[in-house]
Amino acid sequence: MMSEDELDLTQLAELQDALNQDLQALVATVVSDVERNLDQVDRALFDDDLAAARRAAHAARNGALLIDDRALLDALAELETSAQEGDHARVRSARAALHERWPSVRGALERAAGAG
Image (cartoon, rainbow, N blue to C red; front, side, top):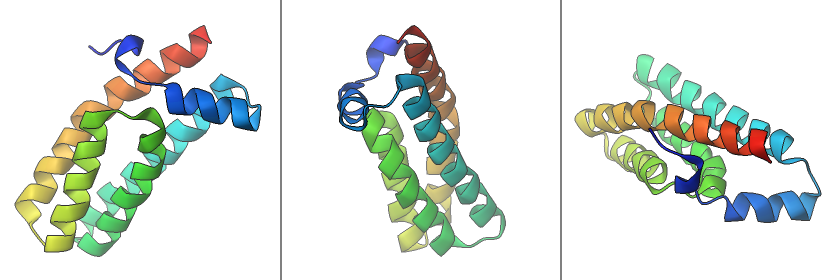
């Protein structure tokens, strides 16, 4: 299980300072944004719409960049690229990696925000 120390929250903290926003509210916004886009990825893949899956993965990367979690960013980039290339097997593999990684990242974010 990932600990909060494994996340680099530097960019999130800088955004928090710039916006003068509560860390809990900022984390809630980032989590909501990433989860909404991951749900869109799943819906698009269910509909076999790789173009929509690519767009949703790209949008999810915006929130994930604030977290700077390399495994999450790599899985999103892989999904985006493989969807662009029409490689269904790689898309499924990247989706599985996302579903494996995101719960740990989300939990670590929520714990960090609760401690903040």
